[in-house]
Image (cartoon, rainbow over all chains, first blue to last red; front, side):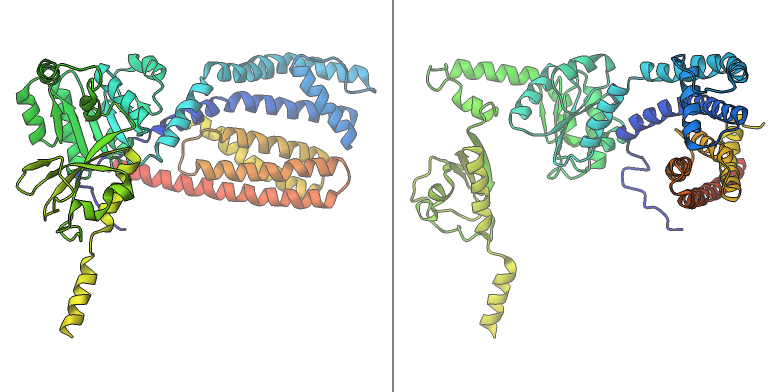
Length: 387
Length: 118
């Protein structure tokens, strides 16, 4: 037999959240087994008994007997299903009722109804549907813990229509999570490998962890990094209570760590240094914090094989074609040229800071990509020259 | 110890086949009522069983039911008795398959128990 390859994060099976609820459904079905069996058995006994007593086995009579049996043990009984041999039939039916009423009705039907009444079918179906849909997610974010910080994150991600899954270890918070209208959530410990694999960390774009305690954040970061070691393809953002802890988290694999007290202090300082004016009140900040959905700012690196290198900004026609504005150029040595003029020449290793509508920014990224000269064509032209 | 839940379900699985075969040869209405009831019970008993072949066993039982229910209608309405017999032969084939699956499962479980012992 072929030996299965053990993944780099160890031999862990992802938790299949959908299967948990499927199992609950099977559990309900299995509780129906014996009650339904009893009902079916007594139906058979009733029909066969009446067939034997009346010695009739044609379709019309058999249907009548079936009807009579069912209305008997279900205690409906408004008419008799036989017309001849009434005494003998009544004797049989009397005995039949004495046995079938407690067994088929009290036990069989009542238990079956009870199973349905007690089991929360609607809830099971809701979870099952949520987790079935969750399995198809790709490029989503995983948010660990549901608290005031992540609530704000969730609000903003929702506005941008970015998909996310919330992992919250405390079941008591579930009603609040549902009230917040969160599409996908699991009530589990997020530092378990099985849980992270279960929420599709291998297909996810990033993870946000914002626990009140650093130890919990650390364990989540380490576990997530273990499964997705590449910092460029999988981003981890976290919060820490102290700068020391933040540094440790960064060393252990977090892309960015925010210390809430430091971040708040800095923002207050920015108000002191730049008192908000009525018109541009917090404009740049609202862009930086992603609060506006109509404008955004991004950094695009110019590829070293791009044919834009050596051209003037006014000649590349990026504003006309994409509707975005280059507000700054970051040179290879890290120096920033703010508000570059049309005469500025793009150099090797430059990064462009571009401002515009999110859709226009996407066009700008494509625009820069289109200008990359593919290496193969370069080689073939070189080859021709040699030839 | 004998697992009585297993005795019940195995009993009805085998009885489903035997009663069905009985009807095929006797063409008797009593036998048909017994066959369809036993087949329905065998189906119900397969609900929610957590075994290796539980899905396949349930599927074969449903196939047998779907053969026998129309067969009963056809037989008692006296239109196509020949077709009813044909359908019950189909149901018998499904019963045979479920018994084969049952045997395979028993072997699997026996092997597993043996492995656990060592």
